[in-house]
Length: 357
Ligand code: GGG
Image (cartoon, rainbow, N blue to C red; front, side, top):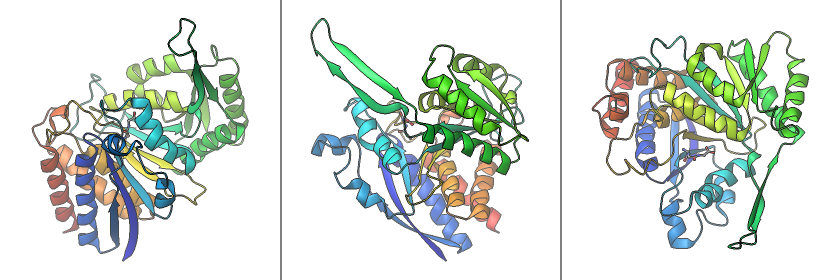
């Protein structure tokens, strides 16, 4: 039995609900295969924690998290706390301090789920987004001056370092190679942002020269967004900055039928820190507490965690069981079904049992 310690941060809104289903699936997997076991430790870090203690997480939270094998994260943000405080107080410091410089987000249409794109099938919607995850537009560098005065000013500086751009671009090419993909699209906005994004393009071209077997193209973010809707099959793998990757993968979620579907892995491929796995979606305050949130993204994120922990067969078993369920038409309301969060999670556990024989 390969035991893994997992820090569980449910966070806000629907976060804890969808993670609960992911944990049940992981526990069922453990029961059935006997190959891996879980030591979950839950941390109540969230907007409620902020309201009680003035901090989204304690001062020593990152020291507490560091020894874990992985972090399983729900969602961050609720109307009770300004969004920039919740995001910069919880998720972003974890990504930055643990140098989780890759945010890997698959865009893939699952069986039984209809994309809003008429005439597009699972063959058309199947690509990987690699988002830079430590700097760029999310670095938090800047400030506000003359608050409340007519000449008030706000400055937010975008930061791109050669180290960060090079490593995320190189990862994209390596990922393409490893997953049998032959094309990488570079998404920037280098006509308008003539310093930082031209620099990114230069670094991309330098790294691309090391991978002559992989074809490339360049797309400006606005055109890339339109292309994702008009022609998703033209993407194989793409690499983008923190902000652009964030926006494009919400479009990706829409193509996958609902934002309740896409998962996300925050990884430091160099090791030394725990990776973090989470749904792409946020806390969805409008449906929080209603029991109807889609747990697919959370379960898929759990499958990515199992793979990253060195169990690719068990990860595939989770995905196969989950796609048995989607293919059977058991879906939550956001996907046109009637299943509750708990019913969907239960159906995945049942499908796992069936597959395990
Ligand atoms: N499940 C992650 C979450 O809470 N996402 C909401 C969000 O706004 N995330 C911003 C980001 O991924 O950078």
